[in-house]
Every structure is written in C-alpha cells, then in structure tokens.
Amino acid sequence: MFNTAKEIIEYCQKNNCHIYDLVLEDELKNSNLTKKEIFEKILEILQVMKKSSTNTLDKKFTTKYKMIDGFAEKCFSYQQISEPIVGKFLMKAMAMAFSTSETNANMGTIAAAPTAGSSGIMPATLMSLKEKYDLDDEVLVKGLLTSIGIGQIIGKYATFAGAEGGCQAECGSASAMAASAAVEILGGSPSEALEAASITLINVLGLACDPIAGLVEYPCNFRNASGVMNALISADMAMAGIKSIVPFDEVASAMGEVGKLLNVSIRETGLGGLAGTKTGCAIRAQFLNLKEEV
Image (tube, rainbow, N blue to C red; front, side, top):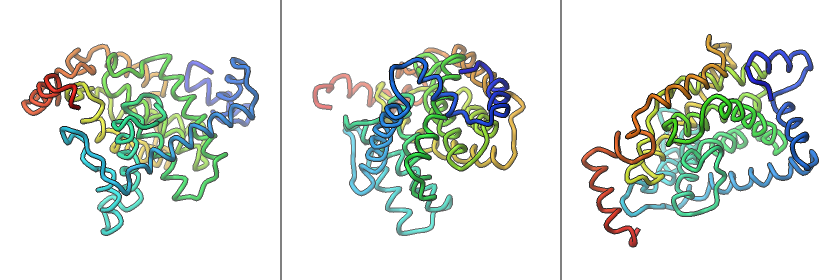
C-alpha cells in the first residue's frame, strides 16, 4: 500500500481502480493465497459479523454489574414499535452494534475489526447497509477490503491499541474503516472513502479509553453504537462533497500524536475517566473481590 492519501488517489485515478484493488494486489503479493481463497476467507469473516450483529436483537443479555443490560434488544424493540428521532434504520444499526458487543461480553465469536473493544462497529455498518440496499456479498467483500486499506494507513501512523492511543485508536479506527467501507459499498470514489475516514477520526480525536474495572463493556458498548452513527454520517458528508482540509494520513498521524499525549489513566488502565468515578471505582472494587463469581 501507499503512504499517503494523495498517492492512493492519484494511483486510483490514473489506473481507474479502487482502494480494494490495491489491498487485494498487496495481499496476493504477500501471501500464498489466490484471489478466490482471499475472497472465501473474507466471506467467512462476513458470516461471523452477520451472526454477531443479530445474535441478541431478540433476546436480552445482561452482565453481572448491568454495564451491559439488554441494550441491543431494547434498541431493536424500540425501532419496531415507535418512530425514533434518528429513524428506524439508524436505531437498528445501533442495535446491531450493541449485539456484537454483547456477543463479545458473552464470550461468543466475533471479528475483531480492528479490536474486540470496537468489534460492533464494522458488522453493524456492513449488515445494516446490506439490509437497506439489498447488497450481495461481493459488494460487502469490496467494502471490507477497502476498510483494510484504511486500517493499513492507521497502522503506519498511529495505533489500534487503546492502551497506547485511547479509544480514538479503537472505536475511532473502527469507525473510520467502516466509513470508508460504506462509501465504497454505495459507489463512492477512493477520494470520498478517504475523506469519510478523515471526518470520522476527526470527530473522535482525543477520545479516552476508560473501561470500568478494565472490562470491555462500559462505556465501550455505547461507543460502538455511536461509532456506527459516526461512520454513516461521515460517509454521507463525504459523498455530499464535504472535504477535510487535512488528508487522511495526516489525520491518522495526529491521532497517534494525541494518543501519546493522553494521560496513562485514560489509556485502558481502568483508572481515570468514567472508570475513576465513584460508581466506576465501586464496581472495580466489587469485581476484584468477587472475580471468581463474574
């Protein structure tokens, strides 16, 4: 893959190709897999995403300290019986994100794209668009490949680890990847995919990683749901022609710098932010003393 957004855009324009073409070409060079085998492996990942995003839509899953309390089922039911402010589509998309978060908390199978803590964002984005636009799997594969390209750039200039860069590196990265996938899926250009990724990361620059008791439950679940919204609105903005004056590679680099500036207490240590509140500390104390019962 290339190092800058400018290089990617220029190459795609010159060769009339997409970001997913670059990713596929790179994978073919660096693996012993054929194009067919790569697509089959991605289809396996998509099946995992499909299952996790619908796993708890019709059943309530609750964790011991109620940091997860049937949110997927509640969101899903709400959009069925009323007209949400954000509309039924976005409400169901959030429900799908909660579903994967709940599946993860229940030790179910998920696709960490790019991390377990942010694993609800990509499935909810892809599967909600699949349902809304009646998309086939080949289109979704191209979207997922596009998101991999965005992830490769993030990996070059920043990090995916909340312990290094805060939640901007986890849910922020996942949202940026999902936004680029959404643009590709809906027929947008490589330039628009990169703009969407930029806008998405900008929206959460500096986001703390402050899980209560160090568990990937709260506030990770809410940030997965809002991450889907972030990805979708950023994709729409990009396809409307809105641009970020700072190109994506520079945005990713800024995210890396901001992550280094974050205090260690809000980098997945479970000490500061929400984890450091009176309620957060009380749950942490209970968890440490009653760990065998959790």
